[in-house]
Length: 117
Image 1: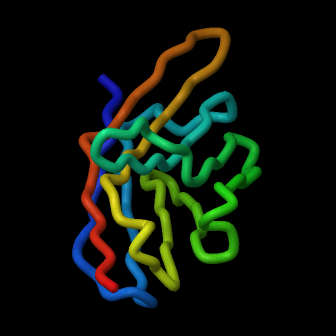
Image 2: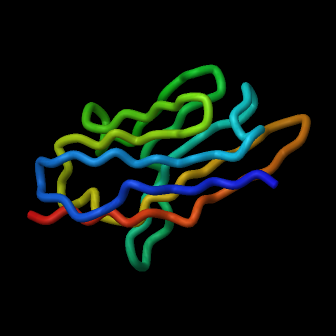
């Protein structure tokens, strides 16, 4: 069964960096799978932070563009976060969304990032 496991969160001062990792089980990465990172803060829905298509296209939320980079290797999705700001604080979730012919969606358990001012 496919699964996602995040790590790399923690407490960092403003201006610092963190790299989040999302280890995927075999078969998650594919040309018709979109991998994403979302952020959630208390009382709010999950917001898209960065997206990586199976073809390699990247998209970022305006608030993180130029500071965050999404990437992957054979088994792991990454989110490099530089110049962190207090508003980047939240729980970060890895997401995999598979499109046709067989559609499914996976979420990781989340990893918490706290940026102090």
